[in-house]
Length: 170
Length: 304
Image (tube, rainbow over all chains, first blue to last red; front, side, top):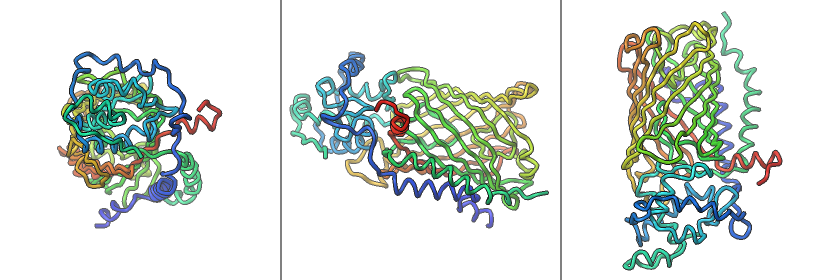
């Protein structure tokens, strides 16, 4: 019983000190100002070659259809996933930052869903974008759906039966 | 014999200063939700996002036949240097019940992604330097002929033996339809010339409870949970390879990735033979901060 009790308590004084300070620091200061969140006009312009990775997608991958095309629930879910996983580099409004390019540019908005899915899956490792295959495939398609919703004309043109989607950016 | 834990209070102020300094680095960083795997021993091929710092605390409670049960704990500072290189520092200690609490050493780990794109099997090279003493009980890996009885002696005795080791792993990992399968062959070399190469393994499989995200922010959505199982153990050494006099564990694992940017991991490891600890209960708490590298770069006059 004594040992079990000790297990549920942080072990030792070093452990107590570590947990206490880390938890305090993270809770109080964790939500502070983001770095690299320079969007819109203030965001640094990334070279056109930054987007060249989109052209590297194999033809078969480019032609893949988005199973969530036109799904407003998927746009909302994709927006949540974007905020959680992508906004840190690409900006909260996808307008880019010092760490990642804008996703509002025509190179991205005019790319096929399959191209964006392939890029998300494989990353652009040499340019600093990690692979995101750790997100399950449906979640990656949800993010693609969200990205295309940023230009609703683009989304509508790919899915004639879909309803117009309003971007959910804040 | 002097009880080592009596020295701890005098060390605490300096430890506190170190940790406060480290936390101050995080003031300007943005938290970011990570999709962390549930593994505690096994590694998949996913590296830390570039410029992000992940701070993790882990604890392992272990039963000990012929000695006192223990609770080993470690803190990890994991940094994504690039999209293909992650570097990490561990600080470890342990409490052996009815004995003492001691610092047991540090590790410096590096992981290198070998291929730029995703493949059916993705290799990552893992190289680690360990500077620990024999009282280290975090059991982050079980190597060679490591067996339960090695840990039965008192801390005062165990801490006399210092180990400088080089550890290399090939992290092979594949993700398909939500399932991740990871296999890690391990070789370890104590830097003393007389010590042989040791062999070990870790394998794991895991899957999120849901593959599609819900549209709303939620704590208890199924997609926030990843469950799996891992198995790890020793494979002998260069002089005596094989399964004899080795220990092995099977551990169900679960990770809970919270929208508030925290990840909680739980694992209950069961010894598979008489050489193994009967039970290893582990838990971990972590949080990831993006933008850390850029902030440090600015402090030192780097271009934003």
